Image 1 (tube, rainbow, N blue to C red):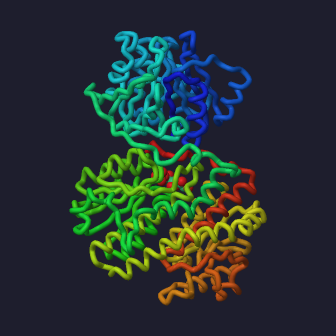
Image 2 (cartoon, rainbow, N blue to C red):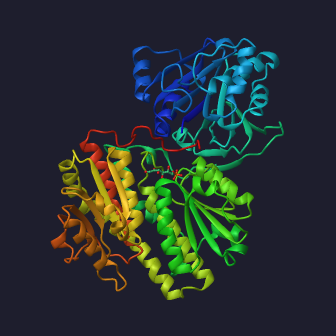
Length: 616
Ligand code: F6R
């Protein structure tokens, strides 16, 4: 949700903080602020409502004194609207201490009353300020920042990452986390804290994971970690697999455009090292080895786009491995008392690895005896740490808020899982596995063709549709999750009413929405596949055409049967039925982006949304 960064070292604190915030702005962008201890030993802060650019402009016009210790924050408002006063950092100990917070402090009202009773004064409507005032007053008593932090966090309920610094302790930043992300970047004579590795990857690729309920104290030459009881902890170290340039726009007009162009690579990289001699090799699943042959059910959980990738996984895993698969939204799963057993494999799908709904669902599943596998794109994130095993997607950093390349990488990982289970369980023979893997390996080239061929025509269509009020998306079988994904992208990017339907469901209600001029995208299955639903989808097109719909079909190259019934046909290369949706989704990603651009909207940072939803 919010992005945080902390720095201690010889460099310019302001430079380090602003650089880290720029690379994390996608996490939250309704206000931003920094605090530094300047070279005169004074605590200086600057914070502004609005995107990071507002703070940058402010600092350009009126610079602030620099130093070598600092913390910075981009906010996505929860308690208290976006305003200068509610932006972080918040101050404690009479303005000598600065604190930033990501998450929600659920018992803040009770703590606030306690602070008010003791004469404390609040200047914001946030839940975060109570933590600043509490740490400040304990620091006054003890003079030990780490200990003051420890004594406060043990009283907090909810989800939080907190960073704090005090002007009496220059060269020290203390962080703490519960149910909210925090990683350390270990430099040479300098150290960093961040919500994710993007905060510091420009300066170091050596990183440490901070576990649940742990506190970290960074100084230029040391990193010390303790748990909430004060016991020392040895953090897990890892190397960041991508470099800073992967998270830069690199000449593209938007991260979204860049990331759509990277969809072929996201699939290719997710396959690398996992296919040998026509068989799937997934050593990452070793921690689950003794249960994988015995599972009687798979439950895939995720939110939004990740859940749609999960739906594709259901079709593939059931077809190949013949094990029943349910797909559920994490927040629904978690609160409905699901039936779980040690033979249930719960597979979470998350780009960020921090989505609170999914994290809580994973914990719930483990507590209730299920085994858990994370499919995740972000190293050092929380969901993999809370799971029995992790299968990383290698889509590279996804910065645009709306997920694109992560979706195709997630589907690829789920397909690999399906084939791996089929291999272990003997539900497909070697030749069948090899044939499906060959299809997977062909995808990057075919995706390249789609990106190249579809972009210009879709941009034209989108510009022509700039005033459209409503768009519908239809698909059957694996085309159905793609219809849902196309609609979600249009809602979140172009702020247009959009709905995705299973085409077979049309006659059961949604067809009433069709009136003359209604735009409907239809994902058309291949006519070449003998079990194909092609004729049924063509019938669906005729039904809506007869009622005046304007149909844009996404159909295979050479499918002439669809031509008489569609106003426009966007072509994709032939792929076997289960693989076709990974191609069909690309024109819809491009369409959402282009329509948003035609409306003059910010495609990387749509309103009201944040990249990583770390609150429930
Ligand atoms: C839509 C989108 C969201 C995310 C969802 C889950 O474009 O980006 O629906 O897919 O919030 O996020 P992760 O995958 O980080 O758990």
